[in-house]
Image 1 (cartoon, rainbow, N blue to C red):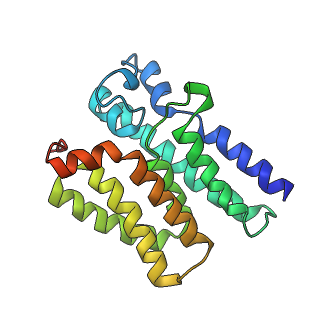
Image 2: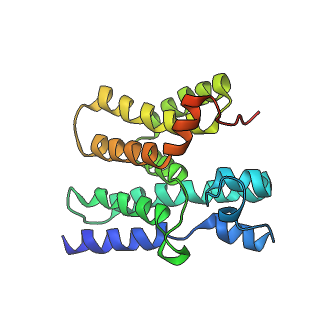
Length: 193
């Protein structure tokens, strides 16, 4: 149990590293929290600094979520130790190093989902890319990815810890996308292309 708590604490501090802010500084681009949508995530960084700066950030965010789930499978944690993955997500959303203003948690959640079930994640990603192609809105890609992932786990596996974690991540991402949802319903959400 103590190892579970330590694992979650380490997860929070790893999750709290905001790669968008670091990449913007290294590339001498503006702080993404002060331009574009004001969000310190990869999508806003794409708009404000370009894909060469944003793509490594996206990959690092996904990698840390995946690596945390992979590490959980190697350590002698309790059956509930995997819930520490939520600590990585909370670190991403509320980073102690950056004034508790982080991203929206999509890429880190995607990495956690990939670690939980690569097959379910792949299927969810294909469906989410179809949503993106039809809607041309990144926010719908983000929301549908985690929704489809939780739905696929629920249909395939029924209730269990992975489904609980997937549902929690989906709920968190829907909450962080409140403003996007309002713009989607009003027809004001910008298109990617």
